[in-house]
Length: 440
Image 1 (tube, one colour):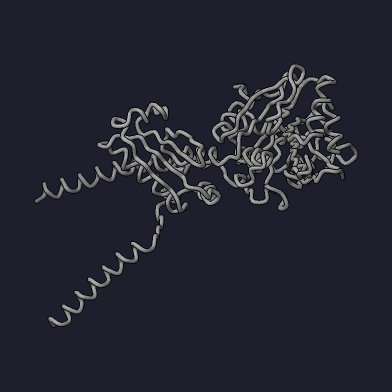
Image 2 (tube, helix red, strand yellow):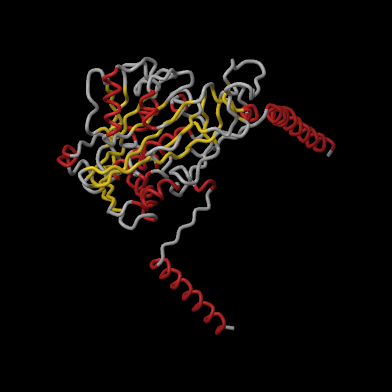
């Protein structure tokens, strides 16, 4: 009996030693929490996989605070997806000169360093760190220049019509944003993307010339055009060999997802031969116009394809509407977005030129940016145009839904249980106990 106990104890100690040795040699992590809340998102994992150089986090926190342990636990998750993560803790009380030189303002502030580029992180969230990682991984400064002077949507505007919210998101990703009036200035040489956001008035002749020259020299453009606009930019459309169909795209499927207005185009299909091939989110486009592209020197690819039960409505959108084949209306599926690409030779070196045309500007406006996957689609467009292909698959992290949504009927039932049934049950039990004690 004693021999059996000795053998059992020896085997137990051996198993413990082997477990420790295996744990030191192999790094294994499994997140069993709901929604994997202790793991990094797919967006962060994909971005870390593209970063081949050391990533350093310099944390400014006092030695005695519990903040250090909190930050360390959060940053340690990045070790699992990158081979060279460096975490350095600096006591701001002992190194005031470094605090001043690095412009540290807050307790717990983190300085991210990657290939001599630095970004400050003041919020200990994965989204804040992901934004900083994207900024330092960019190849040079990317300037997004919005054309103005013709009633375009304002990149810093707060109106429902404007792009203020989206521009703020772009800046968080490391893009620099400015505006230009072509009647007063020429397009800067460092322009990464020129944005034409639904102008309401005609461009001057010299502005058109400057715009076409920009395209001829290899400039990249993102052009938004709303339905009903006159052919103010017909020379640009001609250079791309595209035309905009009459009427507004309507979608019969909009009623099935609870939309009362059929002028919302619902996009769930994306071509498999372009940069949206892995994009799976549904996107909504209020009041879109359809586009047709003909053969040209550009490689044109459809980006956004509407449902089969859609068409270009040329009449008033009221009461019951239906497709009329005896008019200029065109039945779906329709293309409301195209990408254009071609190779140019500059100083005997090949250069890639990219342009995107979308028949709607509302989907990135302040009012509709939060609909479905509109925000992430916007990021995909700008990353592709600026040739940041390694960032195309990096989407905004969506907050974990911890809310329980109940119908009115379910709320009524729960209210009846907790406000009536449960108190009545407790009162009844108390009465029974009281009667039993009294009878005894």
